Image (cartoon, rainbow, N blue to C red; front, side):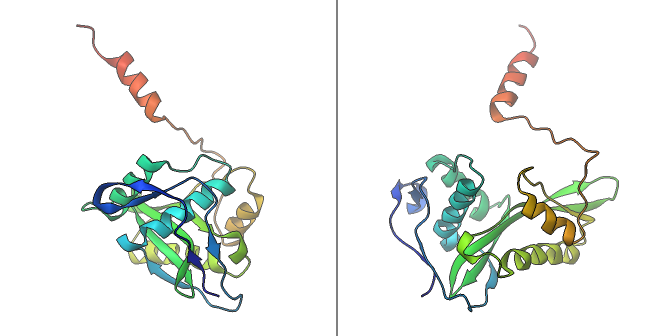
Length: 198
């Protein structure tokens, strides 16, 4: 049976009629194990399926999923007039079962763009079929086509399976670098403290 998204889980409509998902486990029907995946660029009509997959990734990583406001921003940032990222879908029997989200940063030392892989995710029932590897290989191929100097991503420390996969394809763990992050609240706090006295 083809994988498909149920209509359950919608909680309302936003701009342009986009409907938002509840942060619950996505409802999928599963495809036959012998069906080969097809990779394609996501379009605006794919936004509901993409959101479902992002929620599934949040569930896998034990992190809060995007709420209704975040889902609206994903729609605009991914498919608006000036997209901030691009997404690719892995489809089985025409329905998405995995995805990758990428965007470009820049290396001043290499004087070339860097392809940054934000997400690569495959639904649990479709793993061990080469779908994740196909998505990653596609991202690497895009980096080469776009004359990028490198491809970068992060990985959770407990995800040892992913770490083994990355090292197996020739990626290097950058142990000499520290990842720093300033949240939105941190930005606002910094700016308040940095505001000149009147």
